[in-house]
Length: 365
Image 1 (cartoon, rainbow, N blue to C red):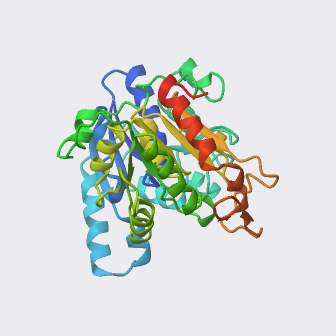
Image 2: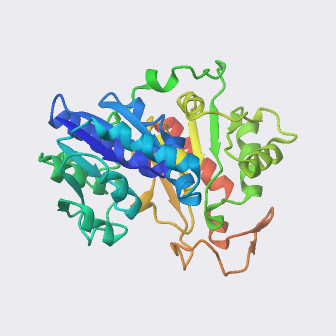
């Protein structure tokens, strides 16, 4: 059986799809997947043994420059890449108009979410077969439900346990092959010291844990004998990482890394601390113990999914507000003004306590 997956972005959404691929590979021996994905994330599907072919696209760029010659050429090349393939199932796992457009270029029966389940309900009009995956559940479970319905197998019982199965998740359910991920990626130097990777970059301004808190956490960890590593993905994140590391022994802002390089850093880590970010999901996919800090967003829907993932969500009265802009005034802590104020209740000492518990026990509290 040959299946085409359309799940282009974001990083977290791509990773959320992996357990469904593993489910299908276990339920339907011999199934092979091709996967359409944004070129920035194309490394990740290739790390799953059931994925035979990755078809990268640059839809974000195409949308910004729809009439450019390079866009027209890239679109023709994309369609040519699909021209000779016939699929038993074309599965739009994104539920957007753009993903439906990409899926319609392939040859095969098209499956997707129904109008009550898709993020953009109009996308459901493009599908030959529509399936329900109710809102109010974790994104991983919703994708697993979609795959099971489209491909005709029973959803694993593990996916139905507890809080979407996260606490009891099979460590291998993401299905990533570490050897594939590490091919060509230099491993960090061996060290007997425990290592903390701080995933401080995210998208919305309101999802950022205060920089003063990151520095205080780095100070606490390095003082306890841990090595602290700070990856980054753009200039603003690099500048923040440099400010956090300044003057602290054992704290280092990393060079720019590929996704494979980031995977190597995560695999070598004793633990991670993350905000609501795609790299937090990558840590979960490699079963790395991680404490994730949530302010305006809801970890029950989009938190890092896995048995060694600890979500620390604020109990601030207005959270989770799901807003990209906070209208409340900053509040003062012992070290700095905290903005957004919902993070004031998630101070570095509290987060470090959870890091130690997770690193020692290996299980989320």
